[in-house]
Image (cartoon, rainbow, N blue to C red; front, side, top):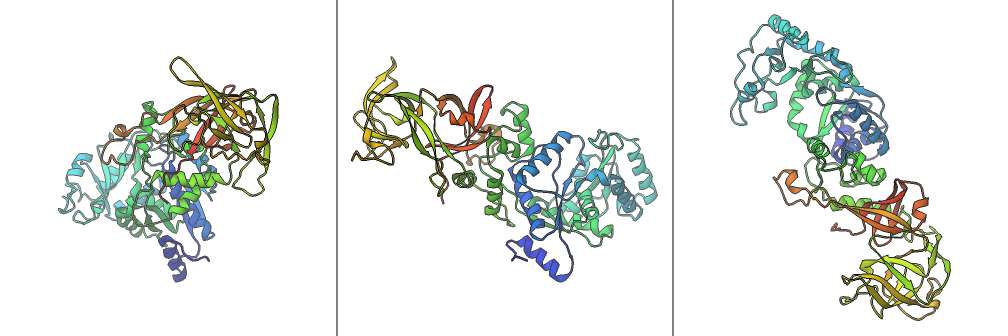
Length: 541
């Protein structure tokens, strides 16, 4: 067995050495009430990854105990996201698979005097729960007899009462320093149709009660969950001990993933979709896994990111620039290079006639990646930002009288600029140095700048989409996400691209020279280049 790399693996190693467990079983437990986001990728990495390392098993466990918010649509999306990230589950399990057993366990707790039916409303329960420094008040219904509680609970099950009229609470300790142990609600009335069980039930177990039972029934040895469940662990243990689970699953908490500039709440993500702030759950700006996939973020890069940030006990926040840096590193050695122009102006080489093919480096960072042919001609398109009529100091791109190299082609001297009525450059005229071809340059001229280009005679129109973060920055603590929305997080340009980009398989990732990493896609009969991540690295390494 490899040496433990984090505190969870150290605990597992101790359990194996002590003989408390002989095989490892985990589970990934999403609630099907929305689409998974990048935070869930870390939970997958921990649960699936831990099981894989110990040659154990990991189930896909759907926590479907709240039918008012859950849909089959979300179940299907969750399955697709897990498969896309490359994980495989042993069994697909639902909390609803165990509803009958969970109910029977509740009756057992009632008969043993460990649970009671309470008539207090949710607000009354909240007001009598106490504070962190003051104990709670016992419910006036706490001392009902097991027989009366059993009758009332069965009447709840049979639909005799309205939502919120009664609930079932565990009888623990209203003076406990842990508020979660102050007679928590373990069943509530909810007249809602369930996406799997239909209208069979009108009472549903609370997650904190169902969680340890479902873990035990699945054979989970180590229940790995995020840090917000740490204060719930005593209740998790209480349920297991009260019901005599042996061996009882062990809950271990780890820090959840938090990333600056990203909306990491399902509730807020749902609101963004519903109010039209984004195009849908799969909008490339969304931190949902389906959004990241649609943007072109490789699954391998996300797994690499989760591995790099590691597993810790303390919550912290990761900079979005670090995530971008990981994606950029991943693509740098895998994405072929190509050329496209976002904001084009025409470049006419006045002393060149005809056309020729030049060798274009497929990926200069990879040894033996090779080259492909690109057609060079008299009229090209270059970036507007690559020519200046009033260049600042140390400007090494196009300027009147200046030399610049066209990528993998020739050096040209810019001679003249043609402007429109507003003074905007619309065309640059230049002369080329015939003996300056890349790889065989004997001109003796040293051009400090290299710019990308596309051939005007054969290029294709391209819709070019660039993205910024949905939230403006990380310096708005305490403000609602709507106050931080970046209203310019999506920018669309009409550019020009080499025809090769239209011919490749849709969804292929490229580094567009000096622009960024982009994914190819189609919008009708047009080429669309959708930004994955920019070339600019803002991460302070």
